[in-house]
Amino acid sequence: MTFARSFTAWRQYRQTVSELGRMTNRELHDLGIDRTDIHSVARSAAQR
Image (tube, rainbow, N blue to C red):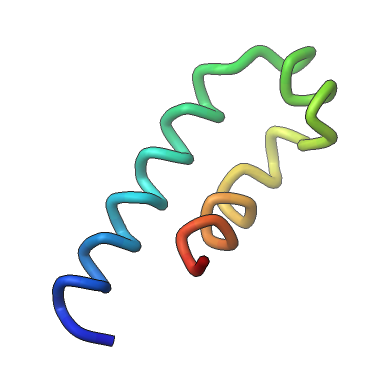
């Protein structure tokens, strides 16, 4: 990966963690995400 692509993936990861972290447990549950899964979901989103 180039630096630019790595930086973009990192920014996407941080944004996803931030957005999911602001959600309530109920909202996360509605999406099928447990609070402990936020980082793995964010990693998956950033790899796309």
